[in-house]
Length: 555
Image (cartoon, rainbow, N blue to C red; front, side, top):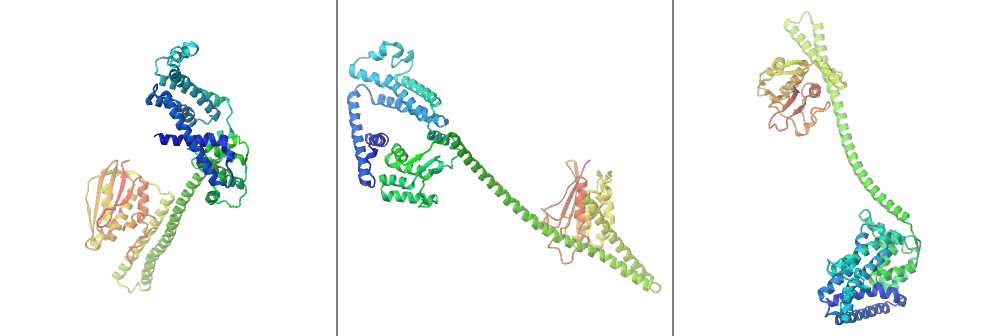
């Protein structure tokens, strides 16, 4: 413990007292070994002096003071650093002069209340000073200042020394104008959380210095090899030309830190100051620099966020563009399908009509009836196709209006089943109505009829012949009726679920022979259901076939 304490004290004494304030000029340039030996000798003398002083203290006061008492006195003395240290963490108005005055005042109080009493007792052997106070003034008793007598001597000294130390620090900080460099460092230190990225370049400096002069100082104490290696690393770190003549703030700060490790911070500041022509920087300039740094940090953050947003928008635009390309292609396919569907019944009508005209008198009656039936069916098909296109246009432009009335849903379902029953029977598809009970709802009968017809017709198309089965079911939910149409057909591919209600969408994996129809059925169905304030969807959990569900609210 003695060795560690002595070495620490000797280093502090030599670096901060002896070398900077008495022997700094004795160091010579390009004599590294001599300078190092000189520093070692100073520290050796410091060690010897400290040990002798400690021994003298031990011989003089060991009988009067225990190790515990000496520790308490040391604690009270070192506590004088606390006010300027802790207040300086949060207050940028503190100055070094005020800190020194506060520490001196605090130390004088400790000397009067603790050190002086036991020193006088050790040499005189009486307690007159402790009992009567200075000049026999009761208020100046060292252990009872101002008649405060409920504290132990160490606690009493601690209270008065720290109180006056803090008061002096605050008063003189406000009264005295601090050095500009102190204000610079204080501002950065207090704002360290906001300017944590200011490291070597946090040295706010306004002046002029030459790299050559800085280099000479470094060589003087570090030697030619170490100085050149350190400067080389500095220039490479900041990407600075090695032939630069003028030194900037970063090099000044770097050099001070480099020298501090060898000769102490006080000596380093003195040496660097000797080769620097420095101008005073106002607090306004410092604040401006800090604000610019803060703005740069904020701007960089904003730019990063904008870049992220732009990347996201770019990705979304790319996806939208791909969807538009697909939609455009589907639109072309849709128009081709519509043109084909319109052309097919017209061609059939024309062919049948020409045959009837050419051979009307000689054609058998049954054959005439068959041709007329074909013309009627093609006309109906053409009419349905045109109606679908017109309905789709009305729905898309918002021109379709509903005729809402209180209706029995089962009656509408029965009408639909009657209209599609022949198609189902012809293909061998069984249609089952699971819940034939009465459901009174407000809806447009014609439009819901169209919805059910589209869904059931689609189910018939995709059901297997002679084995197909379609189940219609109605359930009551929360303020709504839920109608489902389930079939045992080929089902819906996973990739088609999100697009089957789109107006131009057709599955890429349909059979080679496309089902008959314009492809507008589901798109029209969705918009009709939406006009009734309902929803429609296809169930994804179907193991076989497809299941479409739509709702009609109770209103």
